[in-house]
Image 1 (cartoon, rainbow, N blue to C red):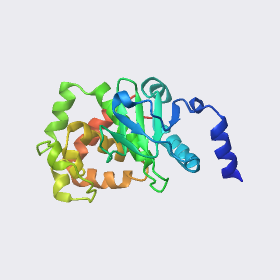
Image 2 (cartoon, rainbow, N blue to C red):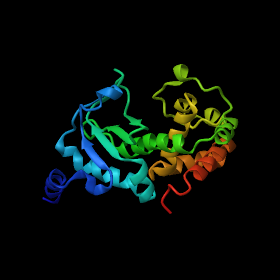
Image 3 (cartoon, one colour):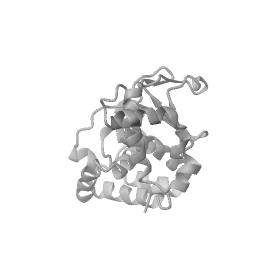
Length: 217
């Protein structure tokens, strides 16, 4: 009964009540080459919980300024590619997340990942980029490192990449680090890597500095 009441409440209360407008699927983003189908009502309460958990990690005033909308999709694609679980529009301060049928519980991870791109673009300077890449003992290469392999590899992490996907671009590298830094259920894995690998530790410190005033205290 409680869950039914929450679902009904989500249908009645304007979604801007949570600070950012929440859009449940939309075809209004074709100008960004984004397609986003509408998720079922049944997944909404779970998604709202994960959105609230995501938001709890940040300064609410910063979020109001730099995250205007969260667009929730059953299926998400961009430029015809369907492997995206999330994407963003920096100019419009929008984050898109694919939730499917609600079976995947990584919505919070995707939100941290995509929102960190907005933080990266706001905060990165030539000096910060130089410090970041100085701790990347590898060459960034998009085409040879697009991977769904999220297995911990000590040799890879010793080079400064948390996972293979981190070797695509500095921004993607930052995205993964940020998501592991903020998502409570992933922090333990990152802490283990920080203790073992000095380059990961250095990147975590850079990330912490970049989120000063953004992360919740």
